[in-house]
Length: 301
Length: 276
Image 1 (cartoon, chains in turn brown, cyan):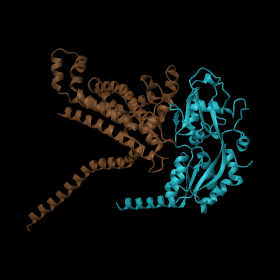
Image 2 (cartoon, rainbow over the protein chains, first blue to last red; image 1 turned 180 degrees about the vertical axis):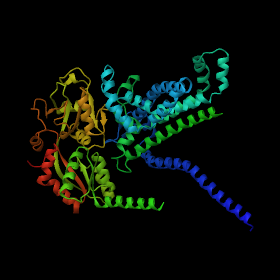
Image 3 (cartoon, rainbow over the protein chains, first blue to last red; image 1 turned 45 degrees about the vertical axis):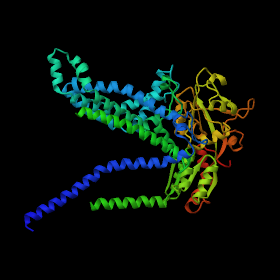
Image 4 (tube, rainbow over the protein chains, first blue to last red; image 1 turned 90 degrees about the vertical axis):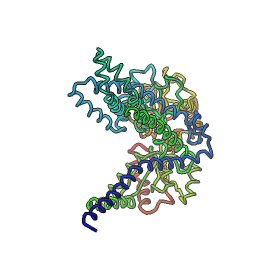
């Protein structure tokens, strides 16, 4: 073989190997997700020998020890209540912050704000839980004592979760706002709109699907959060009766798994029930992320 | 690359070595302080001994014993039937050694005028039948009920001996440790919580209640003598569970805990020694 041909053959082999390696790295994530789902479903499945899906999803009593009663409704609603609270608090503040950073802030301030938001995302959840328990809970109990009997309640969890999901909401909303074509802004100004009118009536509506994606990812973050809610929500498995329940203690799905998995002996109904909660959580998070992804794709178009 | 590999292998060997050579103690949160105190004292007088103590609750400890991941399981309750069955499945033979005694204290905030309750009232509060302090002679305030998680031996013990196996109120807050219960009681005038007396004795803003076995009986404080004599109605033994009778270095450690020195340490930490 001539020297030139040898060189090309070698290069082709190397390219082939690198392509295959990258391919496997890429599908490794998919395989990983499938593997996790298979694993938790396998360990959750035996619960159906003793409990029906209906009794679990709609059962009001979570009483695994010693009675093996696995009503997950209080846990599901607890997670949803805290998540809803964190979105109601976090989305307006987050989107407003994104608008400020993206459209209004002077460049020097923008340089400071953007990294600071990233730092907020880097704070460990246990530290946030700690701050919530030591600072926020007593504060809320003392100032809202008409509604609250203890500082460890859903609203404390919702506020701390809003802090945690805000960096996600801000970054993605900001990207969405930046993705709005400059022509829209120019056209609005040309028609005589003020800066504020342009933002509220032109840019934000144009960035709608991106902001929706940000909200969905914020929801995904909040619903999966474990440590913070375990430390500040009081962990009482009560079905929230009405909106006032946000001022009372609740128990989330994630905190239940974290608190109870350690003691449960393997292959007992309690063990399988906890994995069932994991399956429910996985399903909910998957659906949320899927919707967020669809919404994000619309932004990129 | 070679250097990193060597470091990784050496760390793995050290980790494996410490797992093989040391004593792993897991289980009861009530006994966590006790186990740690004993481990520290034992390591001081027996240099080279390596004892690690973890909490997590009596249930967690027993699950670890069944899984073979601990040498000594600390438990503040007796092992249950279901757990003994699991042990048999795995050829584990659980043996209990009583190492100390404990009075389960019920504590309220210092600002709460209530000083004592009957067992019946405690049951009413913890099952959610009694919801306001004025129903037991206190102020007009909602009762905030604090409990441990269901992995706790104290949770199981209180359920059996105070609640008569009735269910806890679903509104009870489930706190991760006795320390967390003590912190909330100290900060919340409405709260009532339970735990090993050692965690509530002499703590600021916290008052341990005297308990009357029946209405009209004299309320009793969980002093050491009252716990030993079972005059305090909620007194219980604290156990070490091992797979088979304690042997080897585990036996040395257990003998230390039962010795006069070990029992004095238990008393200093606020637990009740087996003998005076």
